[in-house]
Amino acid sequence: MELNELTARQLNERLQKKEIKAVDILESVFRRIDRVEGQISAFTSLDKKRAIDVLSSLDKKGKTEGNSSLYGIPAAVKDNICLKDGKTSCSSRVLKNFISPYSAAVIKKLEEAGSVVFGKTNLDEFAMGSSTETSFIGPTHNPWNIEVIPGGSSGGSAAAVAADEAIFAIGSDTGGSIRQPAACCGVVGMKPSYGLVSRYGLVAFASSLDQIGPITKDVYDAALVLGVIAGSDRRDSTSIPDLPKKDYTTSLSAKVKGMRIGLPREYFLSGLDSEVEEAVREAVGLLEKSGAEIMDISLPHTEYCLPAYYIIATAEASANLARYDGVRYGYRTSRQMDLGQMYERTRGEGFGDEVKRRIMLGTYALSAGYYEAYYLKAQKVRTLIKNDFDEAFKKVEAIITPTIPAPAFKIGEKIDNPLQMYLSDIFTISVNLAGLPAISLPCGLSKGKLPIGLQIIGSYLGEEKVLNLAYAYESQTDWHRRKPKLT
Ligand code: GLN
Image (cartoon, rainbow, N blue to C red; front, side, top):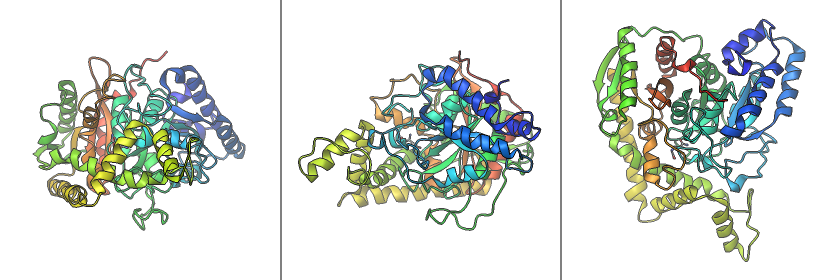
């Protein structure tokens, strides 16, 4: 196998034994990028020189023993996460030429662990979408079938990992944007509990829902990267204070005997693709055989998740995106007459249709007279949804659902039908509303040879249980080893 095909854990072993150098890994990744990026378009920008400089100085130090397991492993990072002196475009015309003056907390943490960012990955504009089609540079293609979407909004990160153009990647998840593309591309994606990973330097979409997390080739690497990026941060007021430093790999165990797992009946209703249902039920069967106790549970407010999310997320987005006014930074129209027109034209020309749709929805939901009817109501529904999970976790230790209702669809198929597009996240959104941790991992391939994802949801700060259960499933299957056939 080429180095770019390996996991961070496997590469770390080789580095420790001095069989390879850190720059060898990067060279291998770039050979792959040269070969397949033309078909995939996973990246918005690449900076090989910067990465080589950092890695060769690590190689010169030559001391890898005892170092973090991300030492020398290059990272691909979603382009809504700030990298000092690098472009952070959010795949939007508004930030096309924006150079960030500082690095996000997660990037600092990756760098402290000996990793280096070599590329920024494509996303739906400002992370609003489920297909990576609304990016102003054009869509990313799914490595399993380049006519199909990679999922979104972290589609670039998921596709890069699936195509072996990256060893691991970082994404952000507001309503499913790590897990849904991970499922579509047949890789592992994890959304941590709200507040576990600092949002400092993540360009805000919906601040009460956004979380950063890893996209990796297997569950072990997800645990590894999570341990590096998690932690308290005073610069993010919603970061959980006094978190102890944790290495999630040390507690990984494949034991599930006696573990109580809930299957929420509301997630297995009509509308779920039969191949997806079959793959998920098979996965559950496997865990049952290993000694897990499977229970039927109910999350009664599930049908309200989507409407509540699209009120809360758009309301917060309308406030967060008010800053792109052509004055402080980013794009400014060249056709300005007076100040009002400058604002209007800048925003009119700078934002794409989906972003504008959300700003209008959110502004409406927050406007005087409608605030109580929409925003406040949605917040109350959000509490009910969270309560459903609290009740469920009194009975079970983890919840299993499909990640996506159907395998990935064709590029262009849903772009003109926002409601259909919004339904792609029907199984992932509840987790963000409730602030819980969840992972998606591959559990099958459809007849059309497209990946299917299994979602495991844990209780608040129950990352270890989620990872253990995922690890237990993964150790008995080889879906995560399947690779798309790209030439
Ligand atoms: N697809 C959802 C949306 O469009 C979720 C996006 C995300 O998680 N960033 O809002």
